[in-house]
Amino acid sequence: MTDFSNEIAVLKDITLEYVDAADLDRYRKIFDIQIAGFNALDQLDASASPCLPEHREFTRGVPLIRQAVLEIDAPWATGQLYRMGELLYGLDVSEDQFKADLKEQLVRAGWDLNGLLVWAAYGRNNEFSRKFSDLLDLDSEDLRVWVRESIRPWYWKLADLQTDPVKYEEWSHGYCPICGNSPVIAVLKEEEGFRFLSCNMCNFSWRTHRLRCGVCGNTDEKKLRYLFTEHESPHRAHVCDGCKSYLLTIDTRKWKFERRIYPRIEHIVMLFLDALAQREGFTSSPVEH
Amino acid sequence: MNFTRRKFLKASGATAVGVAIGGSLFSLNPARAYAAKLKTRFAHESTTICPYCGVGCGLIVSTYSGKVINTEGNPEHPINEGALCSKGNAIYQVANNPRRLDKVRYRAPGSDKWEEKSWEWAVNRIAERVKGTRDRYFTEKLKDGKIVNRTEAIAGLGGAALDSEECYLWRKLATALGIVYIEHQARI
Image (cartoon, rainbow over all chains, first blue to last red; front, side):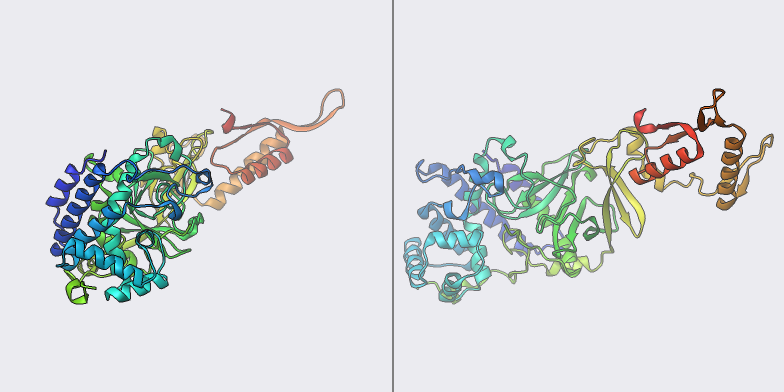
């Protein structure tokens, strides 16, 4: 089972001149809510707990968790939404009232909770998300952030459940074999420079090709470059001129001393590269599959 | 609905800025200001084969403005899977080494001095020597009258740095000259 204590300690100590202190402080609180939510999953009945399905299409590039089979425990999810809502938006209604209101607005939008949760993790905006956002008077991307951050621990648990690394050896796609989400960063590991992608949603890590765009699958070396800063640094942004996407990468071989990798924290450290890559006209696109 | 826009006031100015971390929870404005001071470059990565020996290990070469800035083993190459021998690891120096000669130097027989020569001079000199040796030791027929059209005074050795097309051309040239001792480093 994942132990977050070291990550919490690292996050607590981090200060960066290019990261807003208020944002960082809020992120720590979000992380606390997520860890509490993660731990609460152990209290659920077996029938309500996260489980990894098996299906034959996996070998054909379909992630284990397909949108159709994602079923998150409703009481747990609404509890997470409430606590995250309190933090992000200063929600000042009771939890019971919140749950009743949420249900009512979902019905008015012609939607259901599972639809909302699936959309937040995978979906493009649709008539339901637009209507629901309007009813809550929220920007749809803000709504997505709220819901995604709330249910993220469910995905952590799913990734925790995988115990067969051999199963994922042949998986070289640009999206996560567990939940199908895009990578948050790439990590070059070991002396050989193996490239691992780290899922932005469930934290699962899988190996993939060095010279291939994770978003569009482009392998034309002439269209693959990396952006780096003048000073010697383990951080860089790999860009694809084919689809104009970028992926932040950390080369652990350039670390001065060995340490554990926390993709979420590494991304915060590399926020300046997000700014640089976007300045050059590249975007952090989700992987289509 | 009891929670309204008024109650959903945002905690900070961070909005959907396209940063995937935790959705979009971090404002990129401070990062943009910081990044504006940084000098950046784009590098290309290309795959190639180590030229040193016949094993043919895969390499990834990073270049910036046509200059090699990094070399490493290719982890996807089936031969070496990212590993390199000591020579392969030092291959960066083939491209970046102030001690490497980049002009023709010639020491005449019996001389104790090196002279700098042009590439044209060197190529012509090699051609003269090859032609001279071939002509001097060329065998058209054996004693029993069998036609062989060969020279046994020259041998050819292909190198691991040659690609397939270059090897093909070298083989054609050697045969045309009548060379029969033709070998390649890849067999060593």
